[in-house]
Image (cartoon, rainbow, N blue to C red; front, side, top):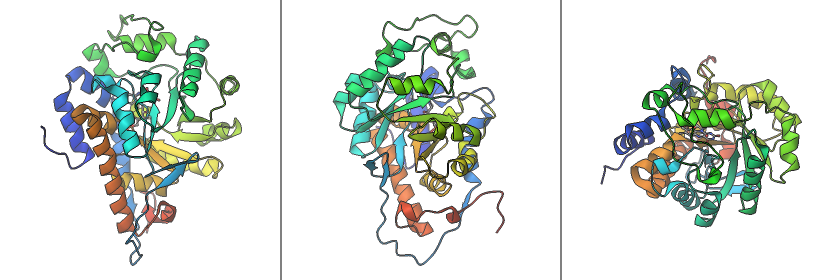
Length: 360
Ligand code: FNR
């Protein structure tokens, strides 16, 4: 058995050792020069704390509530594709870990376990992530299946009219296994340009004409609350509130779409200021430490989502690995709260952090 990692970055290294290079690169990679991939992590490093001392922190309460669901900490599982490349149990193992950590799992539209398998495997609160296909009825069918199987909200990923250029996948001629929920619906055509079936499939099926007015269509086929994932500007945040979304996820898709998008932690405050508390704001991208969770909350997020660390945990140690990843992040976050003088998440304020632009 591999050594016990002591932080999330060590899980990444274990995953690298455990996985075939093609799969590790698929999980770890970003778009083009991977500038944003690095920035997502490094922008957190440039934020420092303004800790308060002599606060009673003998008890720390990490819990929070997202869309009426009380969870143990503001740390949620982001939708990431194809967990069976990491572990044969796939998203079923991830869902079990989410349940045992009392958090929310967002199941990817491109999952390798089916909606029904995931629903049957645990009582975790689950949201379902959506892509909208040119063939709208495919998306509509999956919405109905998610609804029927007790998923509590939809997360519309809106930053993917086409797939970003991920050069590691092109070099590796990445071929993905069939997607369980989409069996028989996608071709297995391989792009002659890139040698990768993932991009060919995505670009063939994804509806690049999707626009704000289509939110009406989505609302007409479901009663579930809808969150939009992929917002990075005040303009889009305001639009999202206007069309009546239940929440916003500030995200650059883990830097896999448009390189030179800003680090999400740098884009967060612009969105927070525009939304003015009208809907909850979550963020993801580069969260690797409990200190990062704290910084995101101080800048106005209600919770963070974690993508790659979950698949690294899964690849390294299966369901237990995912649980450890979440527990470690929670432990680090709790310690950060104690050392900044915040006994509960409500105590975390903008004044507890200092960004690069700010002077003392
Ligand atoms: C993703 N992401 C993603 N997002 C989405 O809405 N649907 C999806 O199917 C996927 N698939 C996916 C696969 C892999 C391998 C990665 C790494 C990411 C993006 C994901 O939800 C999230 O935005 C980022 O992963 C967050 O950044 P970190 O935590 O990975 O740095």
